[in-house]
Image 1 (spheres, rainbow, N blue to C red):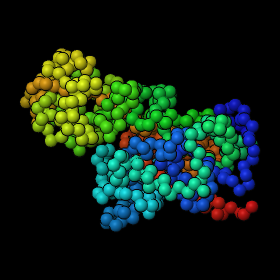
Image 2 (spheres, rainbow, N blue to C red):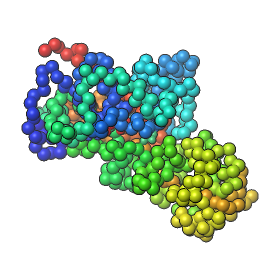
Image 3 (spheres, helix red, strand yellow):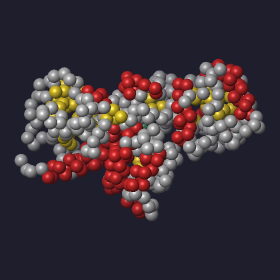
Image 4 (cartoon, protein in one colour):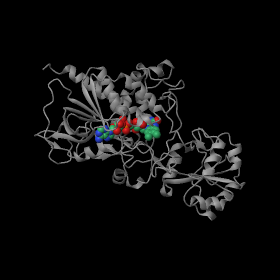
Length: 498
Ligand SMILES: Cc1cc2nc3c(=O)[nH]c(=O)nc-3n(C[C@H](O)[C@H](O)[C@H](O)COP(=O)(O)OP(=O)(O)OC[C@H]3O[C@@H](n4cnc5c(N)ncnc54)[C@H](O)[C@@H]3O)c2cc1C
């Protein structure tokens, strides 16, 4: 038995009990949890290993929106749609750069997962499925999300958890998988188990099937520097467990990564001064950049104090690409008291009042207010002369160099406000090369028997290419969790009784 690190594996503590689970799921985010719940419903014993103390992964923070075509909910609302159209739309939005066979598999089976969630009592908000414009819109209403006072992901978590039958699926929290164990005979490599470190120390869990659902690596500076070096300075916008453990273990097995060159920033996120490098959760504070949701009165400038895009443009893709070209992935939102007083909503979301903005600016931690442009520029580290020129240019009647026509206030009257935002990474882009059964494929072209990769581990780059296709991380994570569980349950039914 060889370990994925290349080191000799520790002595196996004993053979698996004859009737015991031969299936291990690693990670309990929406991919691993969906697989665990579905397996438990189908009576397939398994072990769910989770390094955190709680189950749920990014569902504790995520917006939890997912996309699917051909669902019961669409049919009930008379929406004509099909997996083929969903697939074509994802390839259009991703400029043909997503991994087509994976998108095909995910879109073909998405409705099964969504109808299942529906049957489990998922609290869909009334308006969905909808066409959502926070990312480049689909051509059909096929995005869904749940009602929850905290965040959409929590609606998924609270739907799934009560259906996890722990008599069928043993749950081990606080136990970290550190190695995938394989054996290589004359044929393809085959998984034989995992090695973990937990409260009981180190142990080997023998298994014939291992489903890796360990999520992404957006919180690992080291892996970002290795896999997405040009954008390693992006703000971390996800929970800190996203350290790419699964990516490392698969690379140790000789599995190449793909899709990592496709980063696009999530805009408007603000660095939390108490957690350098991390953004405030979107539900706490952000600059609202989506002109579909709110037409900005402010301007955005880069580190040179210069504007770089029409702030009121409706294409998320266009503005995200514009930010990608700016130094340090950073921009500053600049407005004045008149804008704060007269605009229908404040620049800071999710729904800050003008009073709250003024109070935060008075504290001066991440939001700043000054009585002159020069003073504001000094406070936030922008070149004063350039910022003055930019504001003066914005205030003229000349045609806007970026084509902006909505200029409700010339931003000439003090006091002025500024907030710095930096392109963020909510989810990582790279993931392992897999075959049509979601088995990682090594550089020598061999699929690892018994091993499967699902969820964000596969990488947003594979599902969205160089863009953001809405709901295409949560959606495929749920879909593949259900799909792989169904395949295993069917294999078990077909296997001759021992
Ligand atoms: C703020 C925010 C908003 C988002 N909104 C959306 C959205 O609306 N739509 C969308 O499609 N996507 C969205 N995403 C992305 C999406 O939520 C995630 O990509 C998805 O939830 C990941 O699910 P997962 O199960 O693959 O991974 P995770 O949820 O990250 O779960 C992985 C689990 O594996 C565990 N784990 C990791 N390594 C080990 C190990 N070595 N041993 C044991 N356990 C391990 C982790 O602790 C974790 O519990 C958002 C992300 C964020 C941060």
